[in-house]
Picture 1 (tube, rainbow, N blue to C red):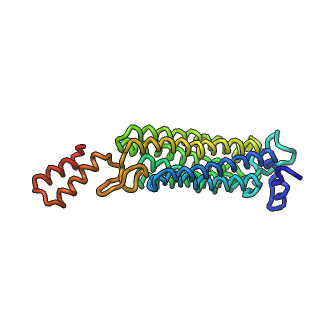
Picture 2 (picture 1 turned 90 degrees about the vertical axis):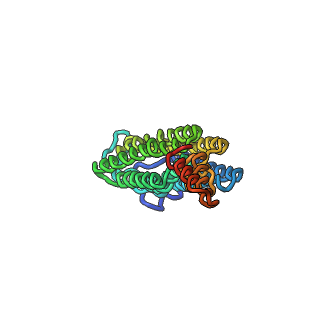
Picture 3 (picture 1 turned 180 degrees about the vertical axis):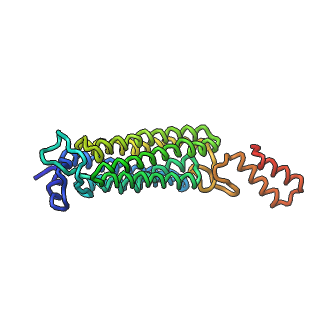
Length: 314
């Protein structure tokens, strides 16, 4: 026999639902697996064209697409799933179909990859550690609530959907408000525009995930094959598309010679006296104060330099 035999091969591996993916769904999931694997290799390969201190985002994108590649291989093989009794049985479902296939491996993928997507975006915009940790925590709450809701058999699953969606809106707020403020504080229009473009490309598909969940695991309205296509397209856009655009935009950031300092954006210069999130001119003034003290300058010169930096003069 030739062709995709994954469903037949793994038919007896675990319990299966009455309503599950067909060979068409498996073929599509394997296709997304191949796309994620190819993207991972490309992101990793492109990192070698950059200096070592400019490779962080490349490596993050390569890692998260690799994780998604493994997850889609698992789903294409009809593994990493469990049957859950559907709250509503639809008229278009096969006769006697009372359970629906839930891919818990998808949520494991999200738990690992969605924080990495946020990290890549925030590093580009020079966000603070506080913003990053707060947003990642809210993101994890979102993923866990979606998973728990998918595994609940009663209408109480919609309570978890509400918690997850509220967490998603908080993540969007952090990206569009707190993260944007940090990007603007770097003092470069290139960074600011790059951050906003990448943020939009990430958030637009993310805001459709609650819709996909409601039609699939939640409402049992669409077939698992359609669910696979819906989630697959969203993942391709928010991971491969986002990653490709972010790398193109980051190249422009490097060329603009924007600096931010230690621990912030990987595209910002690092050096003696640098302060995270400050424009280059302000950091130069800061270094001037350090040098004044080191060279034993008179008190008047020190005070003038200190006032210049403390007053925000650039």
